[in-house]
Image 1 (cartoon, rainbow, N blue to C red):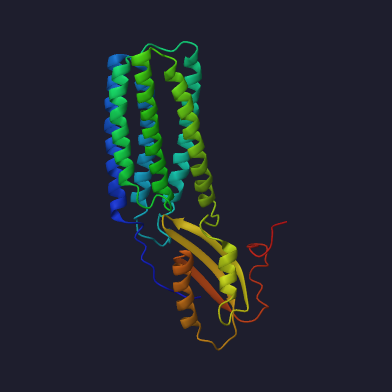
Image 2 (image 1 turned 90 degrees about the vertical axis):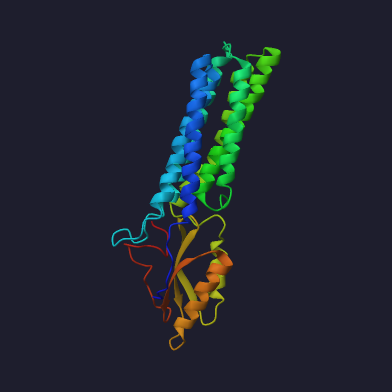
Amino acid sequence: MHAHHHDHDGGPPNATRSFAAITLINLAYTILEAGYGFATNSLALLSDALHNLGDVAGLGLAWGAAVIAQRAPTDRHTYGWRRATLLSPLANALMLVGLSGALAWEAVRRLAAPPEVPGLTIVVVAAIGIAVNLGAAWLVRDGHSHDLNRRGAFLHLMADAAVSFATVLAGAGMLLLGWRWLDPVTALLVGVVVAVGAFGLLRDAFNAAMDAVPAAIDQGKVRAWLEAQHGVDAVHHLHIWSLGAGEIAMTAHLVRPPGDDHDAFLDRVVHELDERFGINHPTLQVEHGHACRHDEHDRAPHGRPVP
């Protein structure tokens, strides 16, 4: 087994600062929006404030996960707590799905009797919400495409901006045209959009939590590349999974003839796995001969399907 050093810092410190900032900013805006909702008896603002409150909880999960992920490994938790950045998006996605369902239910209920609400107040407060959410999304824009924790927060914020924009349009329609039905119809459409976006995050977060091969990696190509390396006669026990945000682990057994410089070989392969595939935590076991049967016992049936 080849041992090599990794710097497990759990992610950059500015990640936690970003989550802290956007959580506190959104909490302040939620309190402001709820206050105006109660003051004007606006159900639209109160509903949006409730939606934002759920998002603040989701952002708080992402913030907490980013903090926990920086905890150093221990004898019991040898990988540290970086998997928290995979579990947080799963909770985040479930919350988004639930909120979108609640939003759609409330919208359908209101269709029969749309409430009278002050359009100008809705436009002004919702416009502030657009600025707040887009500004917060800008803080976590870097890395959200490959960091599920940041992606969950980014989707939350963009969904909030969309909700606020739809609320501005509905408020303008009610203010200028007296169309009270715009409030529930807009809410229903926004609920569908949020649910669709949340489903993709839910799928990716569930796969990551179940140690699936990351979507950006083709395991067949990794296997073919390993098999093509000098002296490699066979590859088995190949597993690739995500340890946390920005860290991908892999294990593999490589059959090579005795006598080669295995240390130099492993150093090169480890480096190239990172450069070619982004696999930065590989563990490679070198074996001699094809008679190795490590995968063929009942306690760890890695090499064959479970009957």
